[in-house]
Length: 88
Image (cartoon, rainbow, N blue to C red):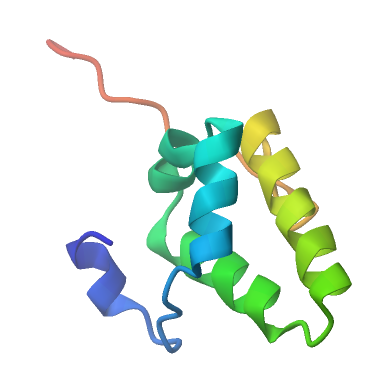
């Protein structure tokens, strides 16, 4: 994670192997990396807090779907920041 992750007030959740593998398989590593640190941390914590493997997989599938869409975070509308334009 980048330096801004150190400002999170919530406990940091390490990336489980199965989540990293799913992001890679889906080609969504860049989409995940572009999300703010709090969102990345929230997704990992939410997925790993599930006790049943089926629930973890359901939550993982939701995260992957939301990352692929790009405009949703935890079933809420999300507007990614606009990239800064050179010369603006």
